[in-house]
Image (tube, rainbow, N blue to C red; front, side, top):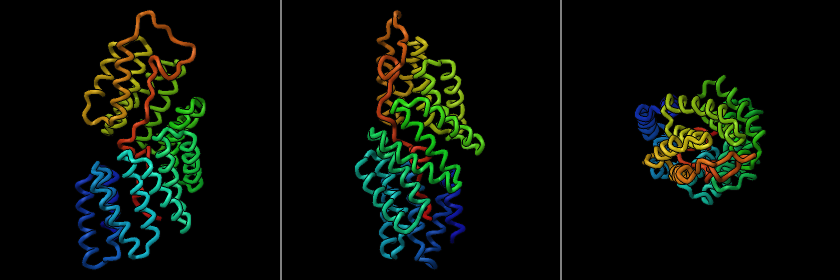
Length: 328
C-alpha cells in the first residue's frame, strides 16, 4: 500500500503523470478493500497529481476529500497537509485572500501538533501569497523564516526554493545586492543538487539584477543559460520568464526590433500566464515607442525599458510555492 503511494509520488515529481496515476489508482483500490484509513492519504496525493497537471478543479476536489477524511478520522497531520494544499489551489486561481486563510489555518494546526517541516513549508507558501499581492515586506519575512527552518533541518532542496523567493522579494524591494547574494548562493546549491528548475530560476534572478545595474553582458550570459536550461527540462513557464528578460535585454541594448519579436512571442503564446502576457504587451509597446536618441539613465528603474508588473503565479508548483504533498 505505502509502496504504491511512494511510487505514485515519485513519478509525479518526475512529471511522469500517467505512471503516477496508475500507482495511485492501485493504492486507492487497496485502500478501499484493506486499508480504508489510508483513503485520505490517497486523496491528498491524487490532488497533488491533478495540481501538477494543471487541473485545479480536480485538485481542489481531492484536497477537500482528504480534509473531510482527516477530520472524520481525527488525523491532524493529514488535515494540515490538506489545508495547505487547498491554499495552493486558491493561490493558483489567484484567490489570494482565500489562499492566505487556508494557509494560516494550516500553519496554526502544524505548529500545534509540532509538524515543523509542514510549518516551514506553509510559511513559505503563505509568503508567496503575499508576494503575488505585492506585499513584498511580509513576503520577504515569511520566506526568510521558511529558508532558515529548512536550512536548520538540513533540507537543502527546500532551502534553495526559498532562497530564490527571498531574492525575488528583495528585487521588488530594490535590494539588488541582497538579490545577487541570495541568488548566487541558491545557484551554487542548485548546481550541486543538479536541480535544473532551481538553476534556471536563480539565473533569472541574477539576470534581472544585472539588467537593472546596466550590466548587459552579464545579464545576457545569465539569460542565455536560463533559456537553455528551461528548454532542456521543458519547463515552459520558466522559459516564458526568460524570454521576457531577453526582450528587456534587447531593448536595453537598443535592439528594439529584437525586443518586439521576443515580446510578441509571449503575447501570442496561449499557454503563457496572464501576467506574463501583460508584461510582454507593455514591453512591446515601450519598445515600439523608443527613439533613436534614447539615452541610458544613470540608474535604471521601473519604467522606460525596464518593465516590472505583478509577478506571475501560474506554475508556481516547483519553486514559487512548495506543494504540501506529504505530511510530517
